Amino acid sequence: MRRRARSQLALVTLALCWAGVACAQSLEFVSRFTWTSSEPRFGGFSSLELTRDGETFVTTTDKGLIAQGRILRDGGRIRGLDNLRFDVLRNAQGAALRSYRTDAEGLAISTSGEIFISFEGRHDIAAYSAADAPARLLPAPQWGFQKNSSLEALAIDASGTLYTMPERSGDLNRPFPVFRFRNGRWDSALQLTRKNGFLPVGADFGPDGRLYILERELTGLAGFATRVRSFEIARNALTDEKILLRTTGGTHDNLEGIAVWASPEGVIRVTMISDDNFRFFQRTELVEYRLVN
Image 1: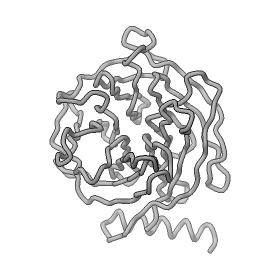
Image 2: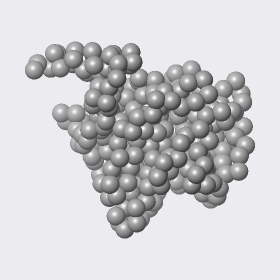
Image 3: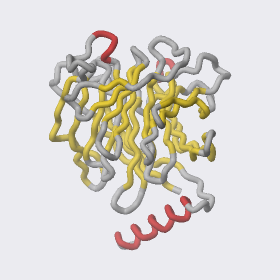
Image 4: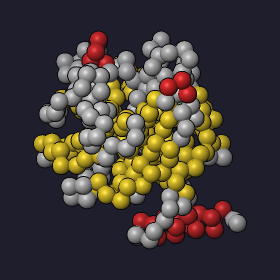
């Protein structure tokens, strides 16, 4: 089949699915790339944002760095990164973040380019006009967050509404609260169902308007298992749940950041990045899948 015909078929299929025609969707593996660097504080990447074309990326680390660069691909497969830049995240006074305040976990970028970052150590969300700019703190959602298990995932929808959720809900049978920030206030009307031992660590809105949530589970010596679910957002509920991916332990490293975008052919791609926890036996990898029906 010619490339143009394949592209047209992909677009028609996506249009039918988005229009409500039943489609059994899943994620199909495309490629992976192991990222190494001589940057002294390299590692601990817990978030990911890509431009709409999937070429330029932004990510943050547990040591208070924000990194930007370009993804190089051959035949749709990741082969390298270039134009790399590392900046230190700053507080409201413009000083570099230190100690437990550096633990940046979630990342979302608005259509105007404003950068939002959630922090696990201090249970906060900050806004930045640029990567090297001082922080502007948003009011934090009020909840009984557990230590080192709070605001892991962060996403922003087309209207500019922020969504975040803690890594732990406090009980195996309790759903995760999903906090929504709009009109200067947080609400907690949404909930994410808790299934098995998976914990939410990343989120992003796709070009289809659905909320994609990345979850991970530590499966003992086998390593980390990964799950990706997507949802429609009704007024006060996450609906139409689809389990798109569930890997066995050790298939990938500790995937924590997720970005959802569309190729020029209109095929949705899901790119994820792993947090190596600054351990020599783990690795920083970029993993890419495509949505198939």
